[in-house]
Length: 179
Image (tube, rainbow, N blue to C red; front, side, top):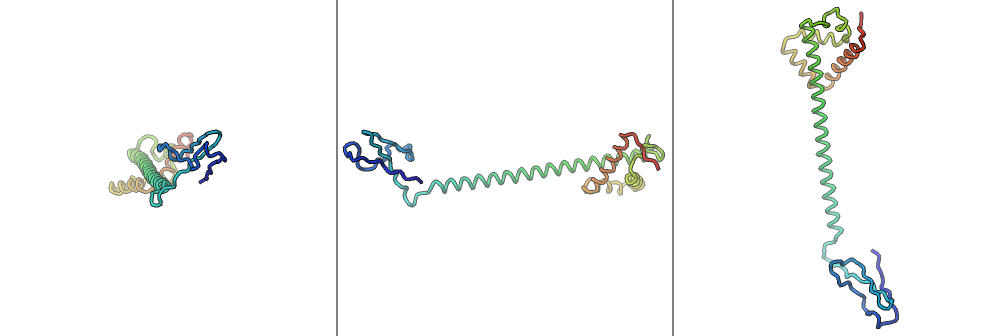
């Protein structure tokens, strides 16, 4: 802290010889300037008692509390983002499983475009055709386990999703894969 020394002149009748203390207790840290015959006297603030709490300790404590609160908020926000991302990925896996099941049901029912010699079915990647035929050849319990596995395992959902995406791209282009 910068120490300000009072300016003194040889004239003792113009200003008191003792240092001037601020009289306004509302502003104990304010500097006051007293001009009498161009003589300036600066105030001296009495030092706080040795056992008095310091302002810097309270400020540090408040800053620590604020930092801890901000850290808790960031962790909560990160958890919320992670949970939202997990829910989104779960919905995407469910959509992949539903699209796979739809293709399998249409193939099993013999819907138009899902026969062995149709160009739409031939546009389906070989791995997806085999998976759909294996799914349709299984009993109901095995079918449920397969759909549940697609919904539960991200790797499986990605693989099936990629095959479905490839099929859609080929169908959109109007191209058929021929043997």
